[in-house]
Image 1 (cartoon, rainbow, N blue to C red):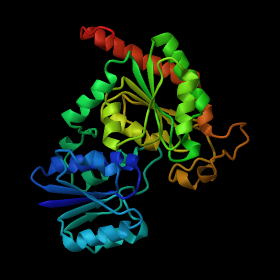
Image 2: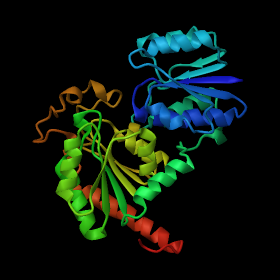
Image 3: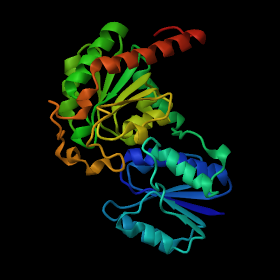
Length: 342
């Protein structure tokens, strides 16, 4: 096996991070093989300095199938693995002439099996990855990127907690007032510095920072790798189910991810990261495909619960209790290492 291609064209930054488990396991299983990843920007930027990845090739937005065809016309691969089968991309791969292909990485999983675990198990049972090659995904940033972020954040009072309130769909967002109330308490009880990421809505982040007051700050939108380096400086990240939460986890930063319409048993982060599920007993939840739920595109819960979203079932007190537990554990671990408080 000399050349492997991994096709990741689902479109989300979180999808790239879910696939990274498999990508890195494949390279560890075949250390002399060149592994190419075909994906979209900006998510692929996170892979560019990964020592286990030979090359990242970018597909043009809106031309996923054509990008696969063009790459497979120019090059041949011994193994092609893909998490993408829309627009007949799986058929294009099947007809590529590769010695081995895997285009279905799901295959009717049970409700509480994580996506990434399912992918790994399928490739392991097919003999394509080795057991000792399976490890948690790790993002690789350059020393220059990390030093730049540390100069920006390391002088701030700790604990340094990042809030990531934005998400691709409205139904996945925790409310502004919840982030505000959580931030106020963390400032009062812990003297925390709160950094609020700006997503698609600057007003949302601005409102949260102004509502918290004190040491709360905005982190403006910028390059994805700069965001990753900033998150690497955090003591804790509290986030909706979105790409930055997975970036933080892949950098070994303690992460609390808030799940609403998507099911934490399938999309949650591995321990020690923590997943909180809003209204887990929802009769409308489609664990196989949450995008088919009535609430997904409307952004409104169809149940008569008096709320707009099941995210409102996750209370500030519930999140606070988990945050404080994580912070206490970090303080105790620091004391054992002989570290002082900032």
